[in-house]
Image (cartoon, rainbow, N blue to C red; front, side):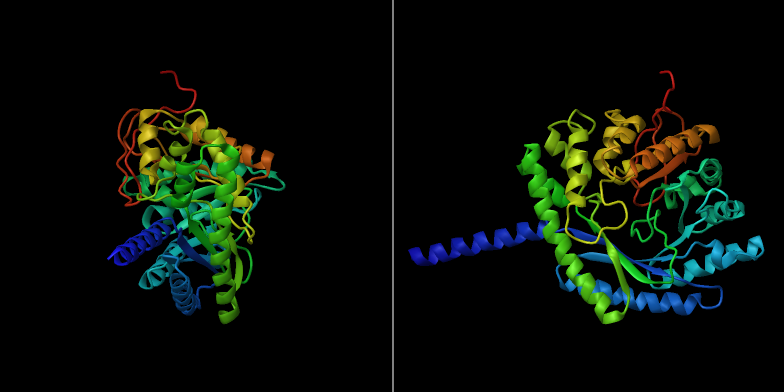
Length: 412
């Protein structure tokens, strides 16, 4: 009888351990495939890529990683729309999106401008596309050669335009001004590449791993060591699968971005609050941001993308609530970006924010990224018709409602 009870107790303990382990295992947010297309072969290329993405998802799921949804990033769209009439280029991108949607894959059409002396006509084209078509894209505002001040102004103009023209201003969710970002990042909308394609990268969703470590360890040294250990374990496992996929398919593995992207179920805001013992934005938030970034960058795998910490205000229910409570601000995010690698992500702005105000924010992001040689992005969402103190009304399913804060420097 005693032996039977002991066996039953041991069984319960083992099952509990397995369940806890499954709960803290990170998901793969996305497998992003990078391809090169033209106006004639895009259907065949997308369909071929979707078969590869299906194989990759099956392999990662079998290894215990949930998720692994497929995404596609093309070479910069000016390469395959150049010389077309404006309306024909919009139509091509719409058809490209329809083709990708049939296989339930996301689509990123790359950068409108890579260099500050590039033609700005693609930016005007992109404004029309983002206002009408659900695709992702970006524009480079800083690289190793310096800050792209002309591109900063073009990006600000686009953000203002898309905010006014797209339904509910949602189009800006799919656009990022990126600074010091290398090719082959898997996270949208800052993803791009300049090669021949036939490559892929992984995006890991590990906010739950951070939460588990920060709930148990409050000492900064212990917390960093334990988080590094946990992330190293999972990234090495995921990379082993990725290398096998590359060997089996002939696609080139470009790396993993272990930035702990949050979700509604696993907010990074609550993970950081567990460490600091107060609301996000309290003293200690900078330390937590630095710990997460160093732990991600210490993983013994091939890094790509941001490889740091994202602070997406409207993609995290805790961050959205704290933003409404004003425990942190745009200036706070820029300060944290000095030690992490996310930038200004899904930040709502008043609907009447001017191009000049938007450009100044983008310039600050570009300057910070260039000064510290770190990848940062700005995803700013002016809220049409909304004023300071009012609630956002974006219709995108991933966006959490929050309150509009005043622009930096505004008198209260």
